[in-house]
Length: 375
Image (cartoon, rainbow, N blue to C red; front, side, top):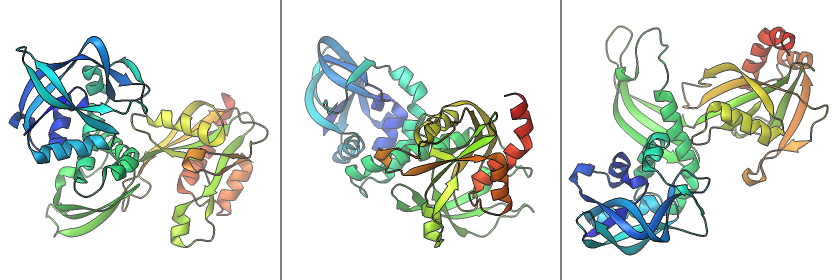
């Protein structure tokens, strides 16, 4: 049996329970400190790190009597974040020193920032971390920690999407909701950057009866911000062109698509923050305000993806810089400036095949006069 000293996020009991796969109330736990150590935020990150610091005391939770499976689950969860185990002696509230294992960060990867606050982390990051941990621990015994580390940004994106969805306001006229769906079995058929989930389920019919059990599948993406940059003074929009997997997978020869700026919400970002960031990254343009077009599911029959669509007002340049995108993401994006009349002509000819662009263009046609009159 092994003892662990948790100084950081695993002091959040809901997260600890998810990682161990059992209720924290079943654990032998005590408050303790690790002498000559302190806990800080990892600089520019949302997690803590522990460092040696003479005279300091790192507050934490001592968990005694952990089984081999408990240790394996903890190691699986933490190893994906480049933490390694080291033996220490901690001091409990009654003054006794006890041996324990501690996860230490790789000091070459992270630098300490401000002193860490569990309360602050729980308020700002706890729900996202706990939701993401549910998916991470579903892969225990299935995927390696290296695979989890590579997948983790999209795991966080899916977790953030779940939290965003839970905060939504119901608008269905029938009054039927998720509570009217009975899930018999849920399987993750595929998981990497994206995921594919299968369900055996039944649901309440409009006549009040319940359907037979049916099999359904859903593509698990994340939430995304979509922005059509528009200069109301020059009456010009900015579009980007890049290779897209959807047309390629469908067999369409027209694989390079004209579309608005688009990007997935990073963990902790609001849709508006993503919109501003992606427009700068993809097109090198700074927006000065956002106009909300719609918050919507582009394909609710098959995909969990959810789009926050905007028209972003900007002072667009006379000429584009040619190409944009991030080298780190292997993006190769060409930027186009198109007059509003030319955009509408493209729409009328059926030359716009990107649904969010169609939506944003029609919204712009409706609100263009207002935007130009107040520019």
